Amino acid sequence: MELGWGPDEEAFRAELAAFLDANAPPEALGHDFAQDEGDGGIPQWARDWQARLFDSGWLVPGYPPELGGRDATPAQSLIYMEELAMRGLPRALHFPGYAIVAPSLLEFGSDEQQALVPAALRGDTVWCIGMSEPGAGSDLASLSTRAVLDGDTFIVNGQKVWTSYAMWAQMCFCYVRTDPNAAKHKGISVLIIDMDTDGIDIRPLRHLSGNAEFAEVFFEDVEVPVTNVVGDVNDGWRITMGSLAHERGGLWVQGVSGLEHALGDLVKLAKATGRDTDPVVRRKLAEAYVTVHSLRALGYKGFSSFAQGSSAPEHSYLKLATSEQGKALYELGVEIAGGPAIVTDNDWAPGSGRWMRSFFTSFASTIAGGSSEIQRNIIAERILGLPRG
Ligand SMILES: Cc1cc2nc3c(=O)[nH]c(=O)nc-3n(C[C@H](O)[C@H](O)[C@H](O)COP(=O)(O)OP(=O)(O)OC[C@H]3O[C@@H](n4cnc5c(N)ncnc54)[C@H](O)[C@@H]3O)c2cc1C
Image (cartoon, rainbow, N blue to C red; front, side, top):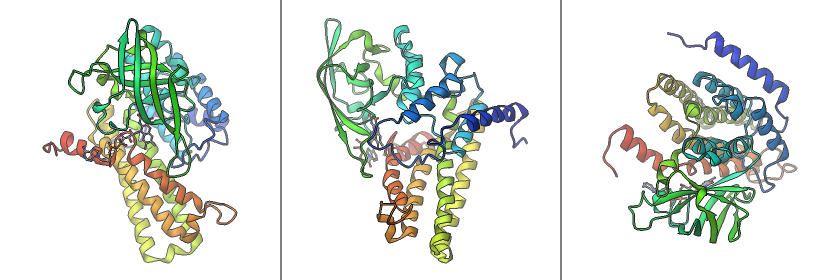
């Protein structure tokens, strides 16, 4: 049994490590993924970093060079995730363009739409995803934003909500209902909407953490050319799962590494506050250590199936497990930090506000991209074969 990487993979890792050591901006290193981006938009260092990764073939290594990659294998893509996560390095601070829109357009877009892909990957165009609505979240197929064809233009009316980066985006990848008489999953289309079009009103929403990085987006008689439909009209449901397929086997790495970083910081916090002698704190830290290391082992087990072309049910569980474990770890941080945890002013309580902010922000990953309850339903029905609840 081979439990290590081969020489090709290690050579790939060494080349990547040399690039990251020489180029990663100091602002990016040790990025706390449990923190959100704040109100200030996408910082220039993050835009420059994403562009540099693209230009150097290190943005999506599994893609060819013209798409910011180097035709890396799935194993090399996993190593890429490991190296970035180990350094706490983000690729970009706005993911929809490179992680969702680009692969979706490559698979379903017209030639004209595929021409938008390099800018989406490089971050030159900021995209937002218009899926959720006040009446359609987990049950996305209930969406009611209407697009009515008038000649060669769709007229869009309705509302989206929780639209990340809408305030800074130039383009929206927007799910609309084009046939209200069809069954729920049919009659949905995806439109590319220029966010500068008349009739779009963007109202930022504030997170529990106090920052605003997503928004409500209102559409009133917004005109969209029919050529902006992605794929076929009324066939948008097929486009709901776009993602970087070759990276799917390694998406868990960031979650698990984030937990490892947080756990390391928790141990330091326990020592600094003298709580490391408290038997309850010690037990919780030890339990978390066992869980986090089990999650990493499970991730590699799933990757092994993925690399051999089989499905990896372990990975369905890892999104649920890492987001819930993150919430528990940050809550433990608040508990260990004690009273000062609620003080977010560093002058009064150095570093302690980090735990409260991260705890607040940690709820987001148990909701975004499919809530924990929905993940449990998927595991129950599709993996365990249990009847629909
Ligand atoms: C940080 C963040 C960023 C986001 N960014 C975007 C974005 O860019 N674009 C976008 O379109 N959306 C975005 N979302 C929205 C996200 O996709 C939705 O919040 C999510 O799909 C849940 O939908 P909802 O909020 O309407 O909750 P609901 O679907 O109304 O769910 C409410 C509660 O009921 C539970 N529930 C619902 N259905 C079931 C069921 N069948 N069985 C058991 N329990 C159930 C849920 O788990 C949840 O606890 C973002 C969300 C967050 C937190």
